[in-house]
Image (cartoon, rainbow, N blue to C red):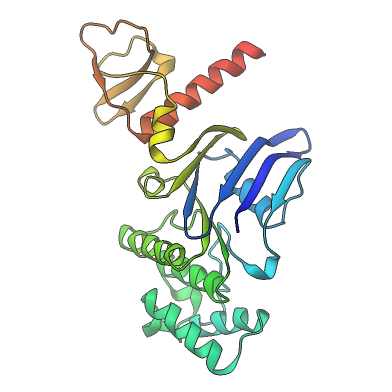
Length: 276
């Protein structure tokens, strides 16, 4: 079954948090929702799980008991041990006895947490707590898994572990939606949804998102268009129209996802200024 948020519009007072945004995720696949702070990622995910009402649009999702949801916080109770966190969530979903014990141990083993089952969640590292939160979200084997920035602030090793867990969940048939600020993670997803200021910048496969940019990215030490330039290492990347003749000292580069996301965001901001 396909799950979706269709043409979603959400307002918080005078703030337009989502403006006609559509998200679609298929079973057995991962969709990455990409964007900076305030882009609308969390609002979109919360609308998918039924925690934010839409002003306009539709949500097609299973009941809350059939959704695994990891919030942007740790996703566990600090005063409970690893095992107690898992058992408490299992009880909520009607799991008990050998069924709960088997499923709990399976997930904790895959998350490399089986050796710390008696440790308080407050005593875990950030990465371990996020893996615990993921395991709790997966405990009842939900068909839809929604993860809000699961790897933000997590060490590189735990990021690799988390992505492995996400991939395994999708391979087992779950539809997975995850928000992230890490573009290298987003590139691994089957589909991307790029948001900026509550609006869709681009969507589709990685190649489709890259192809949505119609312009030139140049590498330069001295950008001519400061409003359209950003640092990449010691130099700058600068966005130019497709028909532009580059300055003699600039070198055209093949844009990667970071280039495209920044360039599209700058273009959208420019269009908004023209419209205001």
